Image (cartoon, rainbow, N blue to C red; front, top):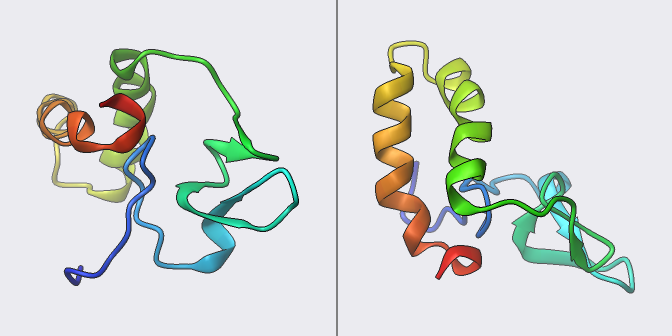
Length: 87
């Protein structure tokens, strides 16, 4: 992953493809959040950072087959506090 890769500022998913970008109220693309977290200018779900981490663990493990659930959790516990939604 290159240093210019943007990440969803809610779930941490890489936003390398424009089709993954969420949408603003005027239906323009939102550069900060993914389509799963942000649609029509608002978050698609209300949850705490801890709940988001638990929700994302299976997706991170699926995308990284050599990673354990505990390792995924620890990485996200370090990364998520740096994301805009959780600051």
